Image (cartoon, rainbow over all chains, first blue to last red):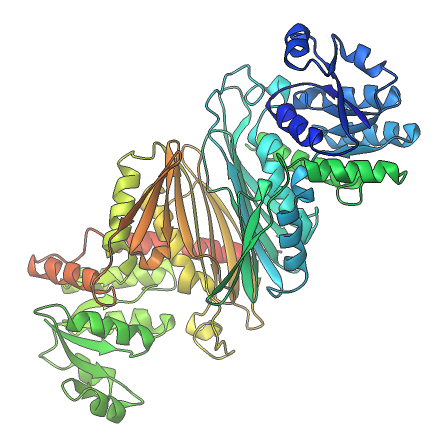
Length: 318
Length: 318
């Protein structure tokens, strides 16, 4: 398929590397409002449009990859679907469940493929760790911890991470990963949760901790921060042992702890890691599917709904 | 000093080993209601009383070490103080703040030394890790995680861990360690907390997660379980790095993470680890102190108060 890129930052560059390593998939065009001429020089083999509209009107493009700031995702997705393109949109696909619902309506009408780019769920190591956890190998799973805190070196009040107008904040940017690992084991709907956050001067959640309780007394503690490094580990605890995933959101290995035994499993990803997600998207589209069973539109809706409830609990605190 | 033991289980045996390695301190007598004759055979150099009263009436005993089940601590402490002995009592010293207040009143009247045996606070590695965290070396501390879950192989409904009449439960038994590390950095009084627990069939907290928020947006997530192993790590996260303590409650080493650098610090404890606590007790008593500044009676009171509020929030949940 021919891929068009809307938005071209750090993630898009890594995505591009992966795309170039998948047979049959072509980085066909970029749309850039600001640096079209530089991109033309840097990527002579890729067509450059000087507007999103121009790219979406290009009949040779099959699928659009969106990596603008979170606040633009919904409009970008709708425009791309309405232009008759399949769409892969960076996470979070929307910043409210209402946005996701709108996108789902448009997607259903269009008959095109739409997916949120929660790449973690497609990584071989991550998938195998979850499979083994769910197989009962570590007994009945009762507790999960996952933290994803990084110290962004260039936090600026108007930058994408701190600016509320660009849907900044730790939960949108990194907190969705810990929530997704919890959803993989316990589902998206906790019985109850409580959240606390450190707010930035710009009013977004700079660091956030969330404690969740799911049916059957299953528990989870997750953390996200854009201002502080954490160990970036996830642990899935069962009655018979636990599975530890270092750097879980870009997992290439994990450990299975049972008593005194530690089994180390290595399952590196290909290229920059997006290959596995890209292969899934290509496979689904070839099969005429409009969603991937591995992260479908209901996942996006449930994820947005949970994020929304958590943020609402913070910003409506006395 | 001559030490008398009230209660003689697994912990007391380890404590005894440490005591025997401290010069000037003597394991002088045990009190046992059930197995006096066996103890006499096993420890021919130690006097054995067949009642607690007998031991407390022994004029040659200077200090009593109490390691009965939690529910008996308060009465044992009061009896020992009233008998004119100094007292070191295993944690938790009491199972309500009211019990601690009563013990403090009796201690003050007696003029004798009283301390809760929160041995972790006296370990060289633990103390150094806390000192370095508080020195600002990892920046402004914003977040702490600590889990202490173990899978007790012999959980019986009437055993000390599961029996509510013996003050069983994860928070009393192991949860107090994570709470103490949080108190060491942020103090004992969170602005708010929320707790969730898995209850046993006997009605005690088998696994418990607590999320705390302290003044200035400082956050902590802690976990305790008597039915499931966790990684048993504590991490103290600052704006410039983090300190990781594996097996933090019996710390012998820790890591200081700053950017890509990891400094490993080894500070093993002596004997079975209780030496450091015993030396502190002996030093305080020699100096005429009735409390240790490292874990004083107010610490015990604040700890009991927090535990009480957490358990109350769980058992009064709808």
